[in-house]
Length: 447
Image (cartoon, rainbow, N blue to C red; front, side):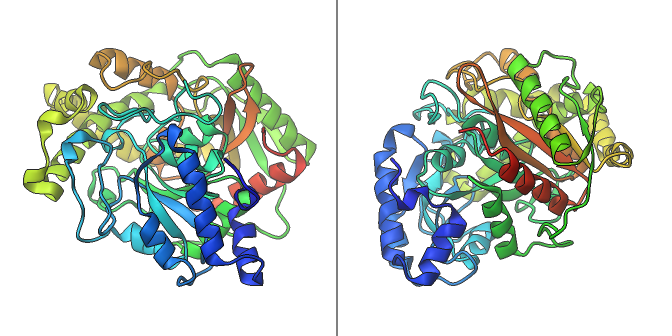
């Protein structure tokens, strides 16, 4: 699927455009051809190729002319938006969400909408009534979720950068599954619309890329709130902690433990102080988050109905969404108590990070599952238990409002990518990105 232009990352694409080595039309046409060739991945749910061709050469910004896709949870004016669900019907928004304007201001050119699970509510991208999004490394396996389409498109070389969002790991999980780079930023940097109205604000927008320098370039173009995210010219020596046991006590695959161990050794080799520790977080934070996620699901369902009015057909929601959205009502007191604990968790996270600059862990507890293992038509309790077992790491930073970076530093014995998570203090993205750049230079990323 990858032509010469497709091998360029976003920074090289931008630079080649600036130098006149290639025209904006050539870049967009080549990306459209790659997207057409990659149709079997089912990663594109709605294309806007004609609009992209019309925008080619007419954009400005630090990433002017670089092709991308927008996750199908963000409304885009004039482009069908499905939110990963048949319940949306044929909804074509008359206005865009703010994130779309933010992306356009960077100069990125969207080729369409990337696949997501229904309302972004689970860790795989195989919504009912639609073909599953296929992993470029093994088409029978999941791309993760909920930015699964974005991860597949970047990994396959269709585009060098794609929009994603993260409310419980939804950028980092697909980054790990597909072998790309994914940064979840701190709360307040670029919050998803409406997330600040939640009892615990957990969701941010962002991107998935093939290189750390592309992630740096994206955030320089966005210029988010808060301290600078640009890595220091002379990165300091860091105190790094590494752990590979799940806070929940559930099993972690040997390949994922090994990836963390190897990443820790790579950090030692470039001069950082690394300590191996047991999980510094208790399983209760994950269990509380999953209780809170039930309330999020109910809110997503209500929000979709308000946005689409009569066009929204709740009867077509999948069993996972229906079960999750209804389940918080069975014990609302437990959900309220969990929410109160989550609101206090930031202090616990801050206490852990007083001793360390960066904490390494797996992103997921196992390689990407085969399609169907986490499908939304599983019995509700089975799906819930599998989600808890498979994803016991990423929600911690969403609750704390802290940054975390998934890097493709490992490979399973079966040949699937394994992501290692670098987590840091609130608003200390530059530390994670600086370490990511150093690891990218010193050991490279698993092909």
